Image (cartoon, rainbow, N blue to C red; front, side, top):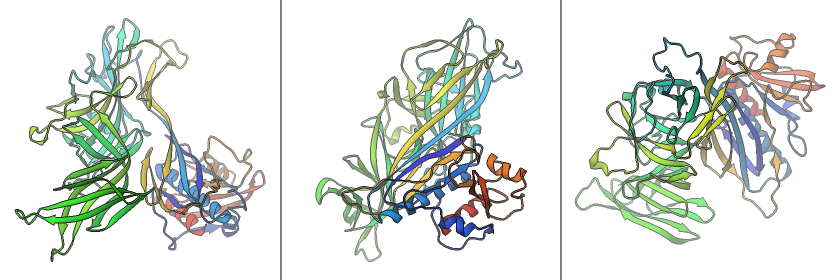
Length: 548
């Protein structure tokens, strides 16, 4: 997998941290060379003057560390010039491919899939390879269009597909379940011609019990839980039986609001808990009166027992519970607030040629539904899917990339050999994320938190933070700037080059290390951020951030 933070455009962003929060305390780190001088020169009088390099095969924590360093430098660059302003945009890109399968040389001993001259087989990839494996030996209901005559084949993990490790972070449901993205492709062999029919492609999100990956471990979704969707983390606000839809939003606030108090979202919006009234019939039950206001005016209001929703103008509130203090003087409401809401109507096109469906779990069976039932019907609603409903795709050949829901792709490649035709899933995805103060988003498996955004004036000033590049995209000979190398010689080829040249030494037992190698990148200095393992590298990165 290759992930890079391609650019960070910062208009007055303070303290944008990816994946971990910034701590100003002391870090145990070994310094080699004139690290302090290097750090003092990191930010020039205009824009940052360093390039940050991460290995193309780096672990996720190295990528996050590189992005954190870039974000801190971008923030400091802005403060050097202005000290105030408005907003931030982060562009993240990621690329990866799954395992492959050779259609012309499939192993006869592989009983999971064996094409006949006029048969078809299903290929599966997932953010977790074990979960992809779990969906091989099951039945796909006719509603899915994915049941294959010649069986199914897991192509394992596609690392750029997203997952949510805890879909119930506030323990509303006492759950630590996980949710994963899947891609499916059912390929037909028509006497040596390869085709994909309508309904033969799918994108899906399915939830599993924590750290579990069998079919029996597939578990249910409900409003308030988080899921990945199209590379980003979303909160489920509604799964309406009345409207037969999924309502999703991006988390802005998750917590508790006291009766009479409000949460301000910005742009004139606020969510207010007007009153919490204890039920006369049940002392353990309270009714909540909540309002959504714009510029002080009420635009929508609810008064009911939790769990309930309040949605308008792209803003949603899911109220999970409410209670009063011991003296019944005031109450509290536990809730999640989201913005950027979207609705996926079941059985209708979400994007052209792709219809949205709920996924139901049966007896070793998955099926699609466009009809959510109310709670008493006990539907096991375990996910959502986008099903291909476009034209049949005929005479597919090497070099063709079949796009799945404008997100991933299913690719055929003969590698210029007559007796080979590999199939695999791949992704090359880039997303831009806009950040407001205190908002947390998860995009392409990178968690992004903005803990300070400064108020703005009329004139915005754009500042470019350092670009995070892959080691395959640059070299010491071509770089025009000093370099910050994140990761050791195993994952970062430029670090390896310095080690092989005898300019730097590290082993598995090395502590978190910041090391400067002078005048080695076209006369520029190089700072190596590494350690004996991934945790030590992350500690070294945090130490550097604390110094900047």
